[in-house]
Image (cartoon, rainbow, N blue to C red):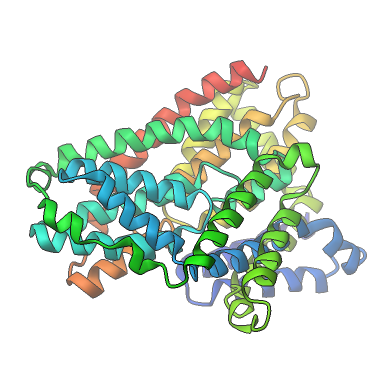
Length: 431
């Protein structure tokens, strides 16, 4: 009992610093994890590390961070942004649909922060010419980046954790997640247009659209073509992950280091330095803490509580996971919440084997909740913080917490309601 209390206290203190930011979250997570190892929560600290650390997730993150930075040098993402603007035509509503769709697509493969950094400056150029408020466009793109990140196992860090723990192949996960998120994106765009009608009645001058030159994004045509082929190859490898019997971390490391071999074989330090070691060690600390909570039985207690509340109903439990995950993730970092819930879901079959013999649907419920809930508040996801800071820096527009929630509450209500209904369908499919 005392051991459980100590572990829970360490977890609570770490979460306090993660939420408040009074101490860097990586330092807090690593200090908490190392303290638990020092206190002997695991009989053998080294074996404790082996039991708790998901090496697949950590190596995957390293590989993808390198890969994305190498691909950025080709100009491929900037090229996609400009082509999207040209294809959208002269109607702002069409532009919103096109921009949010391409943002979601790109975010399903690269990190959301990089996506908004690429697309928001293009959006500013358009809204400047039209003399309209860029805020609805920027917020819609922020939301689209988070929705897009929900679509694949590699689009958002919680999905990396979830699919690694559940051993869900890339293609299987995407087949279930892409359709519902495209519907959510479409309805969100329609809601934005209705809420900001006057900003969507102006027409974009055709000559302005034509003035964009996507070729300027290409510094080296040979590298651009080779990068495009390599990017498609990596996507195909992820799609065929199950058939190839490869872990996502192996494909990610291949993508990262083969991209260096092909494009940057002489000077790799600038790209290795772009690896976000802060994120890697944050995950590492979380793995140790949640592993300790599982070791002393806290996760089993939480799972028992959820089973009792849901009365053994899969429908009720999936709904609870979607809504609780969504609301909580709007206010705190969704990574630690996902890391905490993963061992809880794993415990369900042990608590009630008859009702929860198949926990597959609950992984999707958790993903939908934690990833889409980030759209609720300005601090719900990293893309929110970065996108709003760009809006303030370049346009002098400071979106308040209250103003953001006007959009965020509608987006999240649409997202979670549809996700809840979709879970009813998945529960039938996955019987």
